[in-house]
Image 1 (cartoon, rainbow, N blue to C red):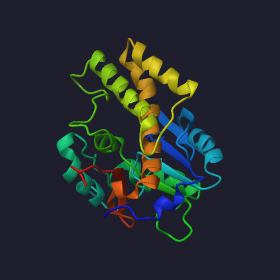
Image 2: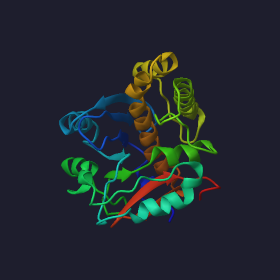
Image 3: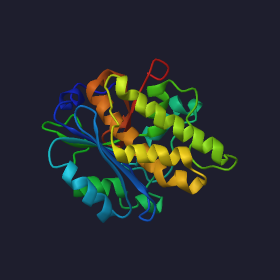
Image 4: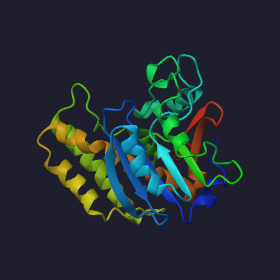
Length: 258
């Protein structure tokens, strides 16, 4: 179903936070925050829960939308969630199908890391609930970029067999350029921050795949934060796959995926 008008009422005076969350505690988690006008205020990384919570807490004291690239609600005993099946039915043709999650996976036996962090921050999981002005949403950057930028396929900046350094570098640099191009979009996002320029410079000059991996999570976090901003300003151009009860993924849609 289409995102409701409730999200649009959150547009002003809100922080939009992106969390590209690692499922384990050792890998990098990308973090980014936008103000209500779409200005990038900070972009960083964390590792364990203490790192991530320490960075998040100052940004979520008031009204906020925290967009996690990680499952927030996992209730199915096995297989995949209805949200993952529904989203994959639309986006798999673009290479943006979802990984399956269930309680059978060790990472989600207790509900998962994103749910734990959202609970610790006292974030609501239902954006339509009365008085919900501090909410957590599950998003998916691959699907988001397909719809936002009209891509025929996902950008191939994730390390996989057969993808060499020039391809990974060019694709991640292309994504950075597309994000910079949102300065003239509706809603606008302005990435005029030295930390962001440092990320783009590292991508452009990367001589090893590890140098790209070191920053890609922060780039994804910026995508996540923009999805929250986009949903607030253009509620008719997003869709929820799944339900509040069993977990949903919110993503922008275009005429092909609506």
